[in-house]
Length: 111
Image (cartoon, rainbow, N blue to C red; front, side, top):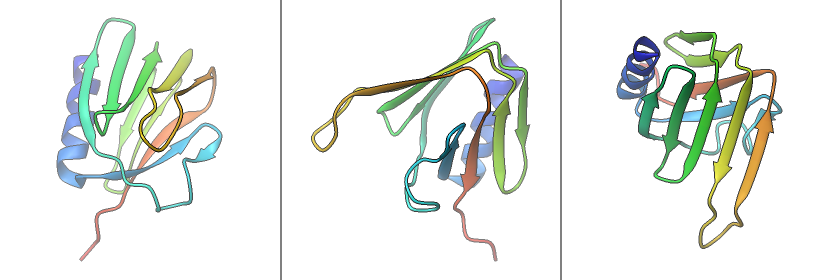
């Protein structure tokens, strides 16, 4: 899992921010929401990702982490839990997925 953590950290260091595609589709309107990595840690079976000091992802038994210049794809998990604790403008929520993929899409302008 250490290799995966390093790949995620490196991808976000290069891209700075990303859009998010969940197993059910884009989170919000495509290319509208912007997310930054604020924490990532790996355990033998779990990967924990925090975005914007707010959303927490817990991914169990991740099989594949595939970084490219334009996106970072996480797939082959047995469970993906997305937890949003809520805030001033939205209520707390939690989603659980047992299939699909998570894609972070680069929003960095290409020159």
